[in-house]
Length: 123
Image (cartoon, rainbow, N blue to C red):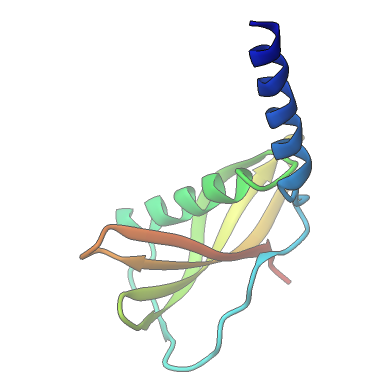
């Protein structure tokens, strides 16, 4: 039993050390290639607000900070074998300070696929 507990603790430590941690102002992921992007005309649609909330939660899995989703402010979309979205998101940090972040998300509804491509502080 002690050996099993020891192995679990060692495995958890290896995972914690091997998993990259990102701060709130640091970039995560890669950047996309421009081309064929169009403004999202109905950014207040529930789908885009939910997508922005999901992007924050997904980013926090890799970040060493706390962000609270407030609202998707604007965005662009690009048709590919699904959709690429570039969302400008208003969020608050742990102290309540407001910040603007850019999330790039790939979504394919047919296969129920979502991927956070990148997340960074907006300029």
